[in-house]
Length: 76
Image (cartoon, rainbow, N blue to C red):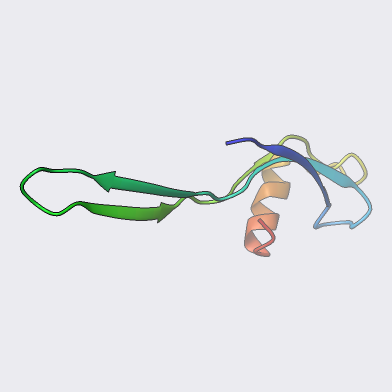
């Protein structure tokens, strides 16, 4: 799974830029092969992962405060 760097605006002041590492969700397919029973399988999807790397330099909010607010607003 390859991540990419994203820039989000600060949820408090809308002036600062927050650097994040984003891992998009992925589908995985698993198959079972048996001799006695027909083959079965399952399909699952992993969750998106956002890693906040820095706080806001403009308003001085920490990375934890920014992450909490972004989750509260359903942005990440």
